[in-house]
Image (cartoon, rainbow, N blue to C red; front, side):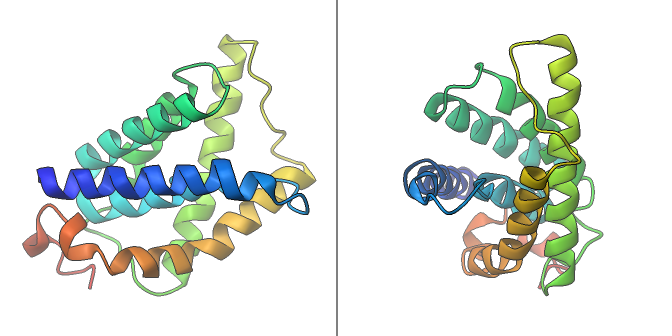
Length: 171
């Protein structure tokens, strides 16, 4: 389990660095796709809710350390997302195109709703409007990248999975 968690942290850190160094500098993109969210959804679906919570929390700390958002904001909603998608770990086949697109799309919507909810209690946060062009573009980017990201992460499945005998559905 330690090896899979360390590899997961390395993948999440790599995704966060790609987001914060490369994708941020592409000026034609109005918003940045959330590669870390895609990785967290994959890890949650692969290993379950406890692992999903842990990967969500660690990814939140990494994102909060890199960006200038209030510390803990990403930890809260990514931990919740990891738990929610970890509930479906043994019930969803994570290969193909449709399941990654639908799960990451719903995770992006859940992320926006959770940030909106957190912004009710903490006014320093400026949440994105759910009915806006920026949110729609982020949703499309995340959904379009999810099959490719899931396919890429499938190469590391034996290392990332903490209990391969239970993941017979996730071929």
